Amino acid sequence: MKRVAILISGGGSNMVALANSMTGDHAARPVLVVSNDAAAVGLAKARDLSIATDVVDHREFGKDRAAFEDVLATKLEDAQPDIICLAGFMRILTEGFTARYEGRMLNIHPSLLPKYKGLHTHQRALDAGDDVHGCSVHEVTSALDDGPILGQARIAVTAQDTADILAARLLPFEHALYVAVLRRYAAGDRRMVHLPFDPVGL
Image (cartoon, rainbow, N blue to C red; front, side, top):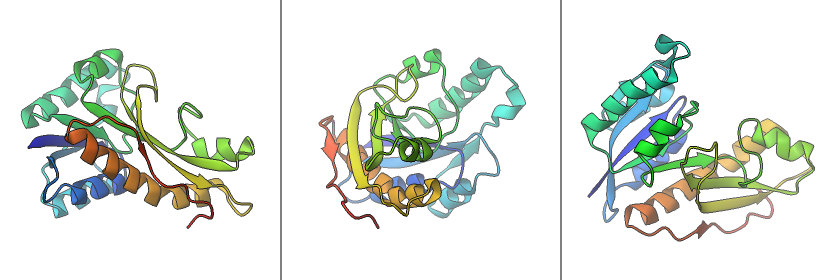
């Protein structure tokens, strides 16, 4: 059985979706949720699911990202994860950290990569006049929002969409995509996952 650690920074909705999926014949189980913010709502959600939690507050390390990551890595190693899932983890990780977990770390990003790496993806899609938006799950490498893409989900952009509305409409597809990719990935299958295109939106 594969052991999964999940890193979060906020509400943890993707974490909850992943954790709830890891039952029955799933090849993995959640063993730890770590946040860089002690106030992250997702920590309480993880505890409600009987998952061990921990906090490594990045603010205590100032601009020393390597020191922050050293402590984070220690917390992770104590849990001995086979797979690490970034689920709304709002820290850019250094090359040293990503190399340490190469081939074992996944991320969900709210755009159709390679489009719109980084932040504000929904507004950028609207500003560009895109008629299709979506999300991607990829393996984490040293380059921001890069690495092999393992799955994508697409939704139509409507005339009524704002960045907030688009984000809310996309979120259920993020949950479904990440769950599908992790199930396949934990079983050793790295084939691309494509969810059915949603032409109308929720």
